[in-house]
Image (cartoon, rainbow, N blue to C red; front, top):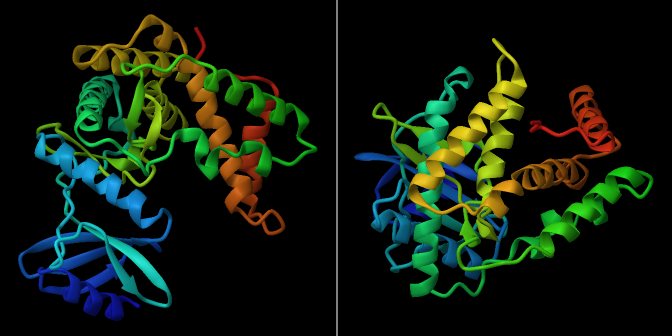
Length: 312
């Protein structure tokens, strides 16, 4: 497939690629004579959705924001159709600067910078939507990944009640120009690169959606507490320090109302239920590995006993 994709990409893009190697089932590193690029090959979202997404991220790049720009094809398109075993959609990106930080380096000083970057992202999202009305990117609750009650088994009554209450509460929150719009949607630490000057680049906007802006903050705090904490203190203190840092940074670039700030624990809980539902959505429940069983039980205990990642 790599050789076939190499030929197709060289037909579509003026890059003179010499090698294509798979990183995941959907992402490919593309080596050219004068640089490295990354190709996303997927049908995860429709052609129209992907065009809206890439128009958005290219706008962010033009505004000087830390994202990877998409390469325009020889046909003048940012999303191209290619025929592999079936028709797929491809987007080719310039290589992003920076590296993934090691876990121990995700500390409040970096989260403060991340907060500022997210605040600026949301300001630019508002500007983008004024110029380019978005017709094909969904509101968050329209996406299949939020169909929690479709995937969480009926016998898990307590967790289903938690999921229903969270969805109902958030859907009933008041939306406004200042608190709701386009956002990244999956700001886990794997989707952030940091260079030697501590500049941040956001990658993988495939899950961008219309949502309450505070969700981007919640996803980042969730990711830090779930995946980056490596001990050396109290995890509650770590979580509070990271939360304060990201909010302080955000408020240097954008407004976060006291009401939405107070909803941060709710959106972190939404992220927890989201991740748990994905386990049922994508994992083969008849062939779970020992690690998968352990992880699911960890989530079950936390959700059934109403444990909060953020405690005062």
